[in-house]
Length: 353
Image 1 (cartoon, helix red, strand yellow):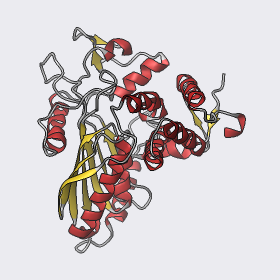
Image 2 (cartoon, helix red, strand yellow):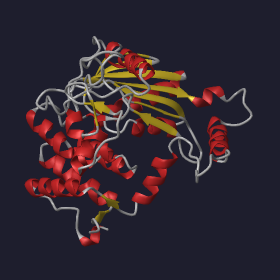
Image 3 (tube, one colour):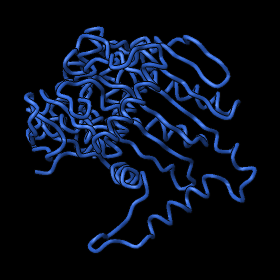
Image 4 (cartoon, helix red, strand yellow):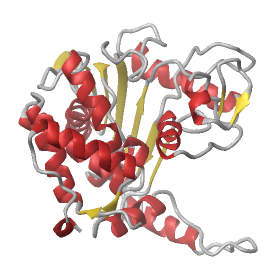
C-alpha cells in the first residue's frame, strides 16, 4: 500500500498548530515545527516529526518550556554563555546561532555556549545556517550518558553529536554525526518500524551485542571507532557542559526521564571565512566548491556508481522530498491522533500530496 504524501509546508503548519494548542508560544512553535520537518525533509526521520509526541509530553509535564526563556549569563566580544532556561532546543539553538554569527562578523570568530538546554534536533540545521552566512561552523551538543568508556560496562558519556559546515556557492557542505556508532534516534526509529539494527551499534542490558532495537534501548550505545569516538565525545563535553559551568555527564534522557529537564548543553562556533580571503585568489566558498567537485569526480572503486561530497545525500533527499514527504505509518497514525486531540486539521488528505 502506498503511503500518503504530504507537502512539507502543510506538515509544518499542522505541527505548529498542534504545538500552539498545547500552550507553546507562536514564535517558539515556528522554530520547533520547522526543525522537525526540516529533519524529515533531509531524510533524517529519527529527528523528524516522529519526535512530536515526546516533545508534547515533555511540554505538558513542564520538563521543557514552550516560551522564550533564554537569557545571557555572561558575554564578551568573541563569545557568550546563554542560559536556555529549558526552552525548546530548536528555539534556544536558533538564538545562539544568530548571536554567534553576529559576533563573528564583528570580531572574526565567536563561541557561544547554551546551558540548561533541550534537544535541538538536527545539528546540521544550525551549522548550515552559519555556513550560509559565510561562516565555517561547528555545532555540538552534550547528551545523556549512553556510552561506556573503552573497556567500561556503565554509561558515562553521551553520544554527543557534532556538525561541521563550510560556505559553498552550490550549497554548504556539512557533516553531521553522533559519536556513537549510530544515533539513538535511529535505534528508536528502527523499533518504531519493526526493523533490526546492524551488529556493532549497541549492547543489550547485560552488555552483550544485540541487533534487537528494543533490547538496545535498555543497553548501551557503542562509541564510533572505539577510543577515537569516545575521546571526541569527551572533549565535546568540555566544550558544552563544562564551558557552560557544569561538571560533564549531567544531561538527562529525553525518554527515561520524561518529566525532568533535559539539561543538555550546546556549543556554536563561528569563524568568518571572509577574514581569510585577503591572501587568497578566490573566495572560500568558491574554493570549497572546487574541492567538493574534485571529490565527486575522483576515481570510483569497482561497483560504485557515484561519490558524494559531505552533505550531498541529505541535500538530494531534500530536493526530492520538497514535492511530498512519505512518513512511516506509525508516525502518520500518531500525528493524526495528536491533531485530533488538539482539534486541528490533519495534514494527510488527498490534496496534500
